[in-house]
Image (cartoon, rainbow, N blue to C red):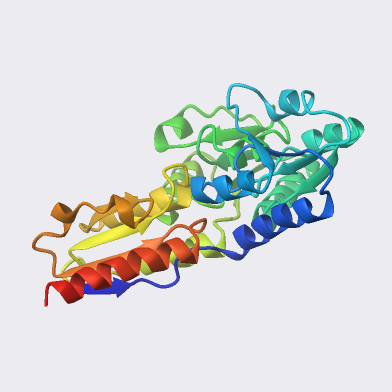
Length: 294
């Protein structure tokens, strides 16, 4: 059995930065309570490590972040996730005398800034995203009246925008194929739409690497990553659409040896919030299996 290590894979720079900022907060504020609103990154293993350092995670999807921060004791540290947070929530946290650590990914910040630019130019904004994803929630919260969320082709049909000036952009971790299809449908409905594809570079190059795999040469692709990681799930989806059997998995202990029966070449990639330690353990285990079967 051959083991093909797909590159690039694993941690993007935004995730590295966010984790470092959270760990630095523990060192900077040793005597304060530290809370993490939502999951810093979509990886339970990383979140558990941060909780072991003393950070309390509050991941209550039934409550808005605005409601959550009102329950946090004054003077505490509050860490906001890499996926982005509504600026009004950040402002409210500061008004409540909380110490804010905003680990927002720079790519998400860039998308936020371009949306605000077009809102100021009196455009309506169509945002291609995933329902209930923290990044989508944060960016569509910038203006709930003039930002219109679409998640699929059917929702494009339901759009009703009277403004002749329309701008369209997207969540940074979507499928490059799905995003392009939705844009084309929007373009048919609003021919003068202004478009900026904001899929982040880390997501883009990982997806391109999977799309480059040959289904005649790869029998199985493992995508190592969390089930809540959208960029991880899209890698699985893209491979399956190419005709490559693909399995999302958290760690090597979850490998089912039955999946490897009659597999000549197994490929491995990982979501942008999966640590190199987990990836390397996974690959090492597969390579040990390879040696055992020689």
